[in-house]
Amino acid sequence: MNTQILPIEDPALTPDAVETAAKLLRAGGLVIIPTETVYGLAANALDGVAVRRIYEAKGRPGDNPLIVHVSDMEMIPPLTAQFPPAAQKLARAFWPGPLTIIVKKSGRIPYETSGGLDTVAIRMPSHPVARAIIAAAGLPLAAPSANLSGKPSPTNAARCIEDMMGRVDAIVDSGPCQVGVESTVITLAEGKPRLLRPGGVTVEALRRVLGEVEVDPAVLHQLEAGAKASSPGMKYKHYAPKAHVIILDGTLEQFVSYVETHKRGRTAALCFAGEESALPVRAFPYGKKDDPETQAKELFDRLRELDDAGEETVYARCPGKEGMGLAVYNRLIRAAGFEVVKL
Image (cartoon, rainbow, N blue to C red; front, side, top):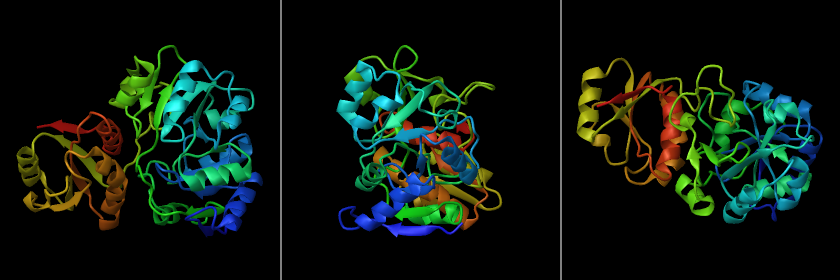
């Protein structure tokens, strides 16, 4: 497939490029678009054939549901059986932004988009280019992260080109993403509100709007065998470099000692900024120790760099689990296949 590269920094300055992307989407094509979280591989969410092409391009399992992206509230009623008051509260508080809300779907959502579930996951991105393309297409867009399935999500167009050149119709280049990890996912379709995936909107922020919000066990633990994934990012090993990643939960001194005694072959450390000189192996810092926002923004790039460097074993510093730190930890334990060593 011939993949076009469409640079769009400002939709108002490049309307022809926006329309090119929109035309491809209306024709059933695949277009990689930027969002504030990560780059997304987009197709018409109402076209099951187009959505199947997403799964094929990514090598993604077909029972892993997709998120439907909209540009305004008027696009939502045809997608849902009901958009309940709790969803309306969350939309007023956090949209446009990095929050996905799961509700009961309408009959217009095909099996492929919902992963076979009776629900639909919806979000309104805040990235101006994403919203301009959705509006120009006049379609809700299903858009998982624009990487080969299982690899770290791309936060810039260069990583999309690495994975997807020749697999999609176009890649929109709009520079680096602001948040760096995928959106928060909350379900309102199963009784009490429940966090399924942490992200840029923290569980603490959700509770300030809704009151009680449960945290699904799969946020911190592996989904039980045979269980159905209610959200992207729950079921499979995700965000993983080729290297064997092991999280070490302890102090810097304990971390350094463990790495020193367990290094073998091409061994590296995924650490916090400023710790590099203390480590006996090559270090890849992924943000400041007490700054989970920078950790989130840099994590996927560092995981990609580990592959670029050909590292085989990677010992990772364990982030905190409060606020945005929960999102960072959630991505890191999946990259490590849930292998955590308590020091």
